[in-house]
Image (cartoon, rainbow, N blue to C red; front, side, top):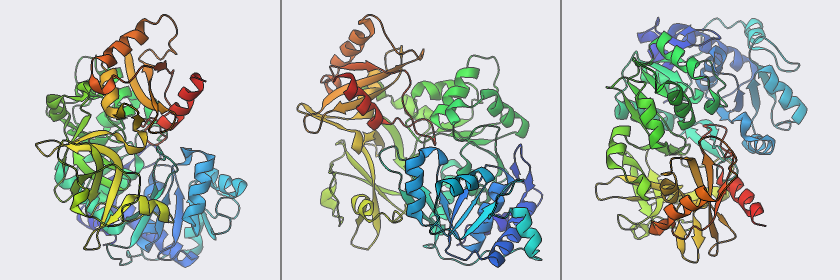
Length: 537
């Protein structure tokens, strides 16, 4: 079940196929398989053992894929944390993971040394790239020292063996380490292949680097574009289009922020800038209809934009094409966002809303179709646990009568009469007022109708069940709106037209919403709620 087998298998079938194309170097599948195997052999001699947890902080490029697959071939457990989540969260995540090894570029090694990351647990440090660091030998020197003669064959593991600990973005609290098993990775790759009909020899533009780990199993070539992967919302649109055109990219993943930026630049141009694209996936946060519409103008008519629904703990769960979503409508009327039907092989239910733990599953937890509740999912692509987080496991996991684990998504939604799932917002973001409960995505869909509104965020001031709803608004022109009360009154009048937004009586204008590092799209509503509270003190 070792997912690194997919790399060696692809190399045996298509050795000359490009595995990676990037500004820092290219690799064929034969080269990637051999080099990762030789590095794995050297790492084994150095002291890396099966089951060891290894922090990986390597820039996207050849070293990223070589070291990643080398550690996977050894059966080590990758610890994957976004460096941009903030010093406090980063310190906490690394300490919580209790890694025994640390692999990264020299800047990451310098930060580890200066900030004291994992000093009590890390015993082995490896520097990638051309520049080394004291006490952390370079990858090149490691190979010179041990001189492995044969690539290491991936160690045998079963489907429940941990392959990685992937930390969530922390958009609704402290980031949590999600335990990924080899079987979970394999199931996710299979779901991606079957759902989106991905064929071998396609070319993938990986604007989210970790998605490149699925490409060998899918038989695709990975292209890393020129960009700051921690700031997809600030990407140079020309760099994305150039990468697609130069490499005849057929498949791409892009956060809503990236799609918005590229689509805004090219949608009004004549011609089709990216005719080779067959499909686009966009996830990480709800994708505005306007963003989907603009991006569809810069790819061929036969191409599809899909918005899969899921989370770090469960991916993918549902999926819907932009054409079907547009035909359904309903978002601007307060119905939420349709995320499609559950994928074949993924089970889903909607249960009554509660913030309390649920130890044992019963069907009595479920609500009728059409009623908003919490989304629960289970299947081979769903993580069974968080690492070193027993309390969060109690809050998010439910054990059924067969011993299977069902995951509470922390998202609210409902099932319509056709079995489609509608997303209404995060459970932690609902606003509970004396007049009833307001759901973020439902209310924001109404406010976002206004042509001057780029996006909005519903927050609550005070404590449930006596919260006061406030809608924070970011305008298209990026100004921190000041002036007459015209726009504010227009938005309040819009809210009064719909029953679900009628309790909203306060509007605030914000220059630029705080968003997550990973996708630059999830709005940090907790931070906005604190800001809004200060405005009325």
